[in-house]
Image (cartoon, rainbow, N blue to C red):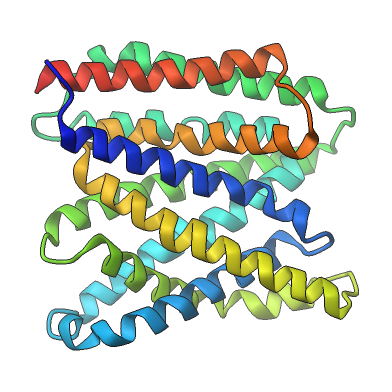
Length: 310
């Protein structure tokens, strides 16, 4: 059976969201000595400020239905999907390395698919097994290449700390993706754009808690030009990755079943690889070619299974 227009639109949104989110992995290279904590604080403060400005004209329409329960949910989503995830991911890369982080975070599509397979009317898990296997092959290739490229041995306590942070990031974003998709399905009268902006306001408010720690643990001195570059990168990431990227992800979450949503997160990894190749001015290694092919084939198989089930 042919793939529906709704499914194609959802996939397109997922691909674009991955393309925008993948740029976040290049951001640290652009700002020099600023820490991941500072990057998170800067990104989400700008995300919150822009969201608040864009929401002002919408308040008369949004105010009547927004309750304390909704704000608690938005705060929880912003904390799990933005603040905790981003800080834990950055710490995992710093302490444990890209390889371990890739291996752990690579289970995101698997976790989402496993949970989504329990939904009413979902595609049976056994039919999704080939797609999940290819996802694991892709992440395994990325991790293997990262291990091969690593020339230093990290202390045991750092590697354990990095592994724990990666697990925290995995759990945090899995819960976020599931809860966010189900709230979007429940609140059909709310646009995905408004929901994203409301999440941005809640995230921005919570990111204020990061500012003291981000400044306190800053061991580097930064001149005016460095701060201006940091502000520009934070603004760019906030606009393109958080506002536009998250909005596209929300739209995709409303259009696709959770078992297919899980596969879409692979595009973030794929585009992060592509941007890395451009930044380093090199062609992919054989393992990286295999990973990209496995990602593409995994998504194609998953889409085909869902098309046959409609």
